[in-house]
Image 1: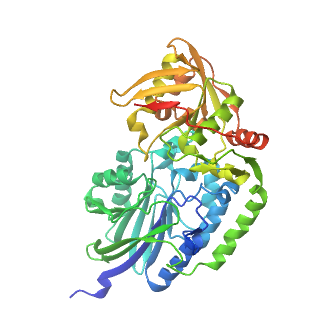
Image 2: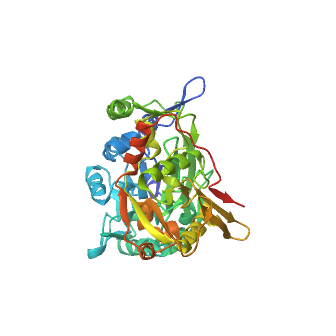
Image 3: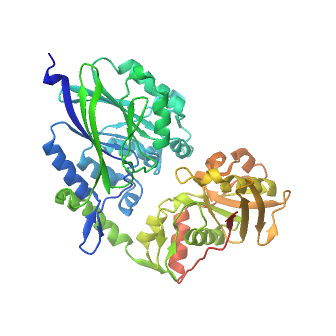
Length: 492
């Protein structure tokens, strides 16, 4: 005879890539509110009061994306997350944006567990975080294991003391190691919390040995909106888009005898003022940070001639042209490469506050100048303009400074021509290029050229310690700035 204790109903709410999206936005004539942590927290409160066994989990990238987060370097975000009280969180690549030492500070501030299984301190081959946690939910044990994306390896090159077993094969092996060692018959449910992107999640699921007993993957990084979870190797795979405009919800029934999910329902729920009452206390708490930020940054620094846009990372944009041209005037080089994904918005102006500028370009790293041959420069453009690099989920595209015209033939998969100020780039001539620290230290992925080759002709030189400082100074000192699409990057 089966007892009711054998089956347990559990509700799992999940978010990912929240990116400091703390505040609700008003949409429509009636002021319909969309997203924001006050409404999300109101829904969490509602579900927690209605469902006995409720868990809330976050699959990475809590930080980076708002002035509140940038000003406090993620500390405000962790304090706000402490208020939300997630049951478990895993790291995303942006959790390292403020540096490895600062990540350890954020982790110490968190009153919730952060799990990651494949980040290691190189010298000691010791895991950086707790690899897993087992939560007891109404007598059932649920194991959560954290896995990060290959993107984090690029961020970690800014700190050479940290390494990662980051390939999918390595990640699968780490999962197997943990499951073999700690997953005993008492573990009723095993969930991977990943930040590697939806397509990679499916590949990872296919690599996992069914004996390890992984039931679900709750992911992030690719900002994927789903109608229903995927199922690979009998593993449910899901994520919940980006920001706080929606939240994922699993209602599952777990069988204690077989340690498996016997019934499930999943919904991607819009977060708006029809969903739940806002959490007024959280709103007040967030406003203490917002008021401080507004006082400091909501001052007008520039007026553009018109609104400039950056609609897609994979193409030349008005805003990208303006920013690269500003840098080019400062750093004095033949070509400035600015990572398209470091421009974190789709438009700017015509009125520009300091807050607007810091939102659109939140990063604050140095600029490197290196000397390359024309042959190397041609190789770089061939790499960054190839069709497979224009995949929105994983592109390493660039905005390019004035005077460059590069023509790429998609059908023939080759760079047809490359000129600087109307003159063809000659293979044996030397040219100077400038790029952000991230792209310099990840030159193989970003530019298709190893760092040693970038330094053969001359030692690299830091020509600006902060791109943000250069942009702020220029915007403050100049008015009625304008920029157009000029055909710097042409695809045939």
